Image (cartoon, rainbow, N blue to C red; front, side, top):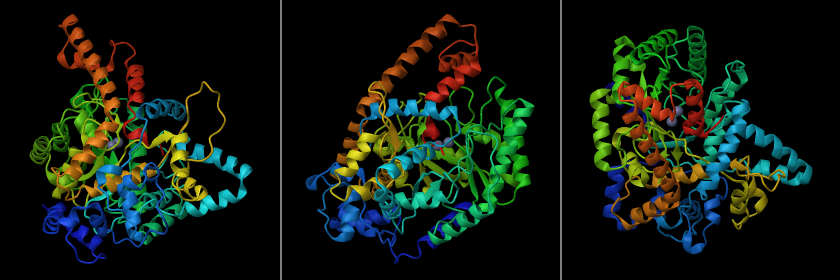
Length: 569
Ligand SMILES: [Zn+2]
Ligand SMILES: [Zn+2]
């Protein structure tokens, strides 16, 4: 399998700067077994050979804990200073709290965002810059300085390249610093605004700066970077004018990739909407073939989807059918990205080790592992088979931590970019509480991300504003990396798993209830209209209504399912 071989080789090259050490999960596990002390997170953290940490980490979760309850990433940064308490991981990883509040407020922000294409971060940036400049000039300068301090150091020497979909506001090159900031060894970004069709061309200086920063921070743009395509693009589009618009935007993105030295490009396969499904597939195949002919180095990567409505990509067989319609010569340049939340929501059991194995086997047999080029790591707020695109924080959803243990210990994923698209919006008050409780200088902490600054005045009745808090990703990256080689039967894992599951318990209960109500409605509708064809009946039910004004209904429900849109720029 040539692509896999080349990936492994590249991965070894990428890690060659670290002292020789075994980095495969099995090897790590062996090491830990030989040396019981290596099982402790403190010891494991010694894998960190980073040279990039500049200062003290100041993550909110750290502040939520006291000395007896130190978080995992807190330990890592502390152990670098030789002050770790060496407590188990399970005690301290504090993932986003207050799910309910977060969910509600996110919806309100999303509505605002939907009205315009202004990126959320940009909006917040503008507001907060004004506020801070007026109130305290000195703080602005300090904040700017501390923005340069990464929340955590990147772990060197790992073949599992975990990162997140970071902001590229005000220029694609900013994504690199944003990824460094959270300690990501891979990242995703939008190459242009994903919510509008007209975008200025990529500026030469932005391109040059992107390439320069990639080299400076040792991101291999051919391996570690996975841009995400626009949500507007549907290459399976039936309408000719809209299809051309979609294709032009898609090709423009691929060309931006080539200009930036990026070889992977993730996008949603699209939707058949009201048209025949296999016709839609062949339109997608045609557009993809044309785009492959018009470019030379970039590999379009199709993302697995949750199978909602007539969306393409819920079933793995759909990718097989698509590949069959594309000339063989191009197959080496067609990738698939497994989105854990999407495939789980589509019905695949990725939660249990057996289910995960079966899924991988099916992937291998139906599509071929040579096409597997990337992963999106998201837990799922909605149950398996719900066909809802609702990303949850790692370990808090229906997938649970065990699913991510499977992923992080799968040798076939080595060297692939693994991108978090988990929610990071948190109530502003929680974020600022976290930073002030941290014990460090509040000024420097408050600036560790761009958005958690002073909140504007609001009426008492209004919902609490939220802001993006990238420290959530910093913690999740650390959490995921800690799973490599961890014994899933160990108390360490069990405690951690239970703790995260507890955090998401209420949210899961709500979603489970909602899903069951939906199934009930579905059952009733089925008995009411037995004359309709199966697929259509199911479709209607998933849309939650009859056949009238479908387009509107679909977009209304889609806007509820934020999915990959949990990041907005
Ligand atoms: Zn995704
Ligand atoms: Zn996506």
